[in-house]
Image (cartoon, rainbow, N blue to C red; front, side):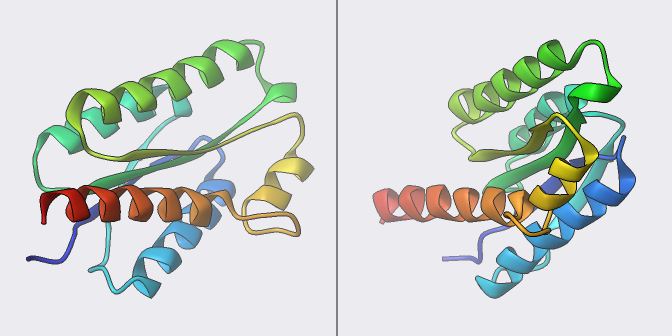
Length: 144
């Protein structure tokens, strides 16, 4: 059986946060022994589902880690973007069978975002990659 291949797709509207989330996801994947993930960038969280769909449909990837941030205080359309990004990413994995994790920070302030991007509370990039690894392990166990 070949090593699983992963993609990370990052919304870069908040570049510093995206870089931190990507690094967290890459660290988990490297710790698992997986080959380096291919990283793709999109402008914002709203574009994550489409990118994840395109990546999943190639058949090249066993899992897609989606990361980014939406901060309530800086956008009037926070609820729409968060809801549609989450729904879209969930739809990708259910439709394609390729795990796609929602590692998008949905917070009120930049301080909250920093704390959840490898700061003092948690690392959502790491957690999203862990979720994808778990789902890939289940899929492989069922195929074997």
